[in-house]
Length: 166
Length: 268
Image 1 (tube, each protein chain N blue to C red):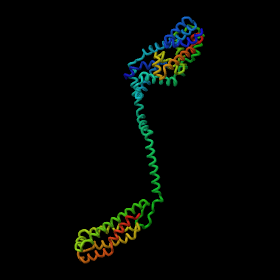
Image 2 (image 1 turned 180 degrees about the horizontal axis):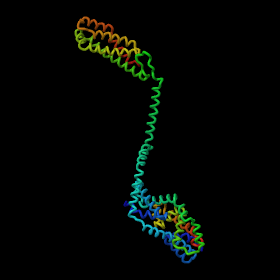
Image 3 (image 1 turned 120 degrees about the vertical axis):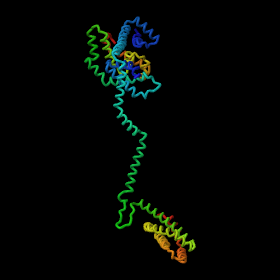
Image 4 (image 1 turned 90 degrees about the horizontal axis):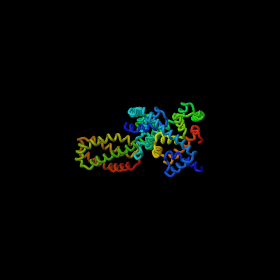
């Protein structure tokens, strides 16, 4: 119970960042703690507990995303990112901040899995590179490299909307 | 500009604060004098600012959640899941424990033992191994193993009979006729009767093991014991002395000793 109180918000931020759907995010928080209680005997003392917990949450998010989310999000809008971009660019209207965020989140969804995870952790969760490296069990250099690639790809994906060559 | 490409590569790191002091300074100086790179800087900044602003959106969503109720909900879910999983888990745990790889040699040994047992049972108790009793036969052995056991027992019984007879006869012939009379009255008579009943059983055994010599000697012993058991008070000392001499003449004790040795050494 105390463990849940301490970490529930942190886990929620991660799960919500992946899905941007409150109910799904809460289900994933619950699933994370269920898994945590089941695996608590496997926790190694010298490991960072928070990092281990977020790793469980991240793995569950990726599994859930693969099974359900990618397709559902496309179906919700009925339009692909490219269609949105072209339509927005042709409209030549002043776009609101919410439109920009919507396009950005859909572009983030199109990133490769590791790039997307690192981008979400870095910007939505506001985690430091060191923390991300620990949670994902990869080197700091890899985190920086994947983050850089994520930004490059987002820049390319959003170029029509930004109104300049990529 | 010649270094615009390398500057643009560093823009994301520069905006994320991942560049070292010197590199960050050179990017800053370049941006101040390059409109093209500056425009690119603005675009990337817009993306990153947009991404960071999503964090604020998350905060707003979080404000709508009852965080005090969530731990209870999670705890209930944990217990419900454990309850639903427990019986299956217990069963699985038992079977998992029972079929752990480390028990496999034991199971293999037990299985091999069972197979061997079945084979041996079939070999020893196969229909052909059973002997059909002959019509009118007094007895029969069920198979070779039982035959061997019975012969061993017969051998032992005969030796026992001979040994006891030997002692009794020794007592009888070594005593004076007067004493022998008294002896046979008190003990020898009873012992002789006991040995006579034993002889009836021994007869069958001797027939069985086909030891004609043994049977002849045992018959002589039987005759003697018959005499002894029937000795009455009317029997005179002379008569007893006569029987003692008869035993000595017939070298009954020597015969018994030889027979014992022969039986002991024989492969029945």
